[in-house]
Image (tube, rainbow, N blue to C red; front, side, top):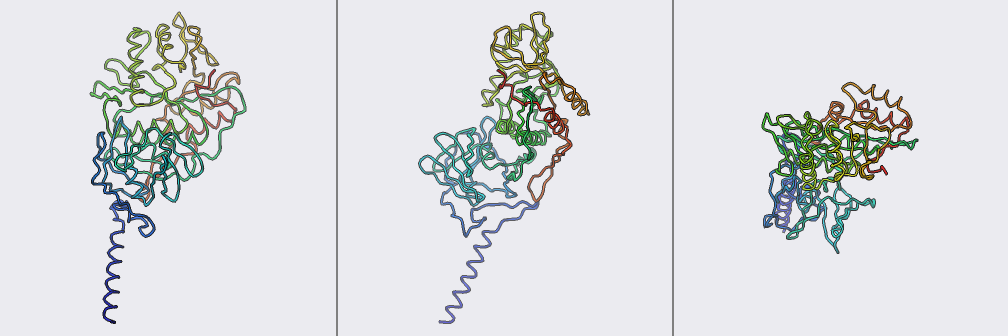
Length: 458
């Protein structure tokens, strides 16, 4: 009898050791942990999924082999990740499973529990609600097939409040939960005079450095949102550099680098920004995008102008990017082109051109005398030059209280003030308190301007 008990005890010890070994995370060389099974995280307290992921028949989308890392854990997924219109769709069911969470649908509501937080997705109305009652409308519908749920990565990221880092070389997305706001103080205005901020020349070129640019742009967007400052993005939808055979139309091809950029545009719309079109290619002929002009007296053809405007609008529509305004490159436009533009846009973010092709710079938004419907917004403060932060601050201080405090800023000037780091496989960053944009916003607040969206103009 005693020998039988001893044998049973030995068997139990071996059995428990084997389970424990199976549940251990595999430590990777770069400090990441690979999570291959739901029992890897708190297996004694979480329900193990009974879904056989290998039997999933798949979605009618293009697959893409990317790496997903959440909170330092590299997820070894059995289900594929898909890409459509440069948005990634990830298997929500398996990911929640891997993170040791729970997922259950009841009466059209998908209940989630992950990271000890409970939330719900109203599948009928496509609305996510967190445990504090905050509601977010999802960018794309949840996809359900064979008991498995797929969600767009931008929606999952917003739900989880992720900061993400995209590595274009390894096709890896690292994400961690934002735990603090970038600005504790909300912007407060004292005047009725409006202020406007536009971030200029935003485009994707498939350049290897675009991953860091996109991340830094998202940090800026998050700061402005946390500070409660409305802002605008001047987006060039198609990037061309003919001399080196570069032509990037995000609506025509899928790719990790382009998906990072579209994710960034989506992120901006979820974080307090409005997007507008800044031309179609911002160039002509052999010119590089962002350097060339595109419209105006050198290229005055109105029919060609319409075709380019419509092509730009089509890209935005194909990609489901909401746009609110149009701005011609370098403000170059003729009176006839200006009149044609009013057929497409209510809000035009450049000076009005009168019948004699003179630019009308107004200290207030100007309603078009052509159709009495479109509004023109100028930038009396002009733009921030290289090493020109103090100059811009001086302009703001000396601006007439009756003149709109409208300016534009090239984000590249801000990038060196946002330091990207990594700790235990988790992406981190530091945003310098003396960064130009932060100083400019502080000065606008001191003067008391009412920071606004262009769509606030009436």
